[in-house]
Length: 377
Image 1 (cartoon, helix red, strand yellow):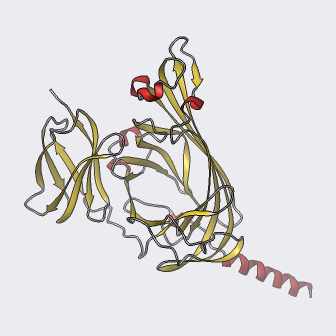
Image 2 (cartoon, rainbow, N blue to C red; image 1 turned 90 degrees about the vertical axis):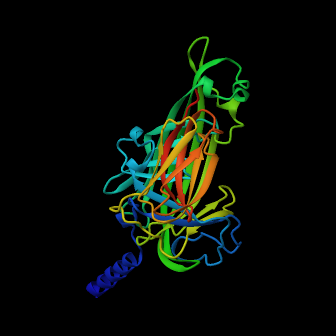
Image 3 (cartoon, rainbow, N blue to C red; image 1 turned 60 degrees about the vertical axis):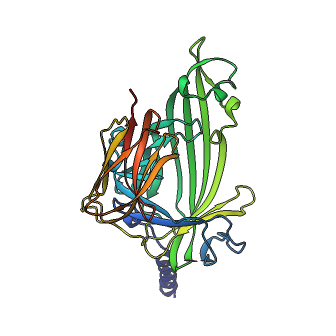
């Protein structure tokens, strides 16, 4: 009788464990992956991420606002600022102006730095390696796992780079500033089951995630060269201060995109927006094929510039130039074919400075980005 009972219990536990999905390194991103998602900024009231243990979530009523988001991962050397991140294997280029660099091991993918406009709203371009990397993905992940990860990044800012409108808020003159950003993630894998989104149903794990972010600004005082926390004086900046972000992330081992990421109010748990996988399955380009590339000659440039397109199939493309704040300051669309892969333009209307030059296809995917320097006599 005892043997029969023990056998039944063992079978039940085995079935229970087998019924739950596990995330392996199969859901890690690789060079060549294009993750395609959409966002519902006003999700139906029927959308709820609640419940623990085995669940069924029906998110089929989701709709999307605006354009589809395409995140293309490439080898790190495709980034215009890759020399600042020698340990990176991957780069994600967003909006032609933000580059995120990742390190990859057998069981972790970590964000180790970024290049682009600063995240606290000072309006400057930074190359910012992380002091402690931020977790992007890990494996294996199974139900009831707990994770607690901390990350931090800091970067120096010369006083001359800070807008006068902000300097006027400080009670004393400063020589320089330093921005400090910390983020602590608390993750509990507390549910699993089937999730239906527009276009498909997936067997998923749910990662219940809370992020505690704190962004501070320190200033080096002119009169005694001591560092002082001036965050309270600059609290009006959009990225400064403390923030708690709560979201539920649903992943499956067979897809690279999150099936859904549900962001909720930290206090009321009311759903605020949902990012979800766009169907059909994300495309993947051949990483062994020659990579599309846009080059500018001369660089630095005064006025006349030649854009050279290499390994670019015929089609419609847009060349965009972004300033260090990530805003587009020049763009033009071209019908590219075998006879017009050398394009001459005049950039005399651009001010002297450093820009980012991007080639974008008709699906709004950024294919190539490099730094462009404009000089004036």
